[in-house]
Image (cartoon, rainbow, N blue to C red; front, side, top):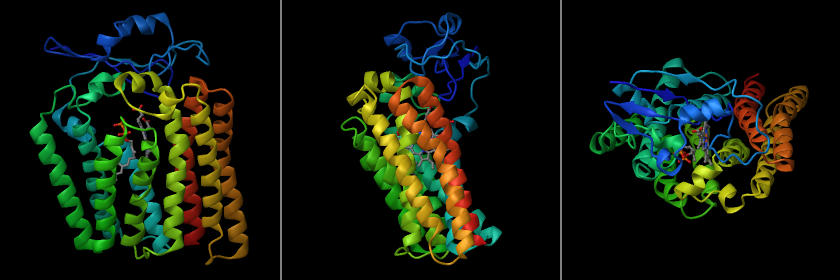
Amino acid sequence: MSTEILIADPLTPSSARVRYVSEGKRVDSQRESHPRDAAHELADGPDDADGAGQGRGQAAAPTTTQAVVATRPSLFSDYIQLTKPRIVTMILVTTVASAMIAAGGWIATLDMLWLLMGTAMVAGSAGAANQIWERRIDCNMTRTASRPLPAERVKLLPAILYTAALVVIGTAILVWQFGYAPALAGVATWLLYVLVYTPMKTRTAWNTTVGAVAGALPVLMGYTAAGGGIEDWTGWLLVAVLAAWQYPHFMAIAWLYRRQYGEAGFCMSTTVDPSGRSAGAQSIAGSIAILGCSVALCVIPGGSIPAMIIASVAAIFACYPMLRASIRFSATPDDVMARKLLRSSLLVLPAVLAIVTVRTVL
Ligand code: HEM
Ligand SMILES: CC(C)=CCC/C(C)=C/CC/C(C)=C/COP(=O)(O)OP(=O)(O)O
């Protein structure tokens, strides 16, 4: 058995080439539409994340590309991959912050562990259901072709059972430990993400707005689990922060993978408007909105005036790099700018949540 994987990483140039060879079977659907050999591509020099190769903003050399010869992913790792673990991890960061903001401090460690377990299971199930739905279309993108279902390392029925078990057990944990509000928020998010967002991806670029709501609602799980009311402004401001953040976050990704999305049949802002103007404008709007919502969260009643001022200034400083990256991406929509924007988005969200949490807790 021989297995070769070129790691895909949107944060580094010239990387999204994944080749998977196992027992003589090659799983690399992208090669059907782009018969360029991955190794040649590495040798030839840099390309953008999806191989669009439109020439602007390319880095000088593929210094950061990782070529790794690895063994076939274990079944365990495949089932972890089915849950989209990096997104789940970030959702858990938002869960901890929203629970602490609602409680005004750390909640009992055992409660926090139950909350994280329940949320991770429901969110992971949503990611797995999305991958089940998209198992065929995922074959058409290099970014997703090596996922466990399109690569046929995991069969459909076990994946469905796993997905169902995760959502049922995760929801049961949330009801048992925290009552109906966080569980209902979780189920509503699951339904929105799987049954509304996922089919919308091939139909209209408005899918991002629905995805932004789905990605933002999990904060209500943490918030209500820790005693926050569903009618509280704070909870909804947290939802707004998350929703706003997803525009710059995803517009960068939508740019980097624009050709893959287009060829696979997905309808994204960058496939509808390949100039990048719409993506740039949405990034700026999202960056301004997160700045405004973060400051609003820092001045909600409950703290001293100096704490409000210090937190607000810190929030502005934390949000500024993503706003600057959005403005630069909008002015020059290219891969270098998009990568910088994606990178800053992944730093800004935890930073803003940390500032608001500290301001609320102190
Ligand atoms: C409209 C909503 C969103 C869309 C369309 C979206 C899309 C994506 C996609 C396609 C990737 C994978 C990039 C790749 O494979 O190279 C990604 C990565 C990621 N997303 Fe999002 N996302 C959204 C919202 C969220 C939310 C709500 C979170 C968590 C709070 C999140 C956290 C992450 C993280 C941590 C990564 C990993 C970046 C990496 O690959 O290193 N995203 N997102
Ligand atoms: C608690 C709970 C139910 C949480 C679930 C919410 C969740 C998973 C939000 C993620 C947000 C999102 C739109 C991700 C991109 O999916 P994508 O389908 O565009 O990504 P892909 O192209 O990589 O599959």
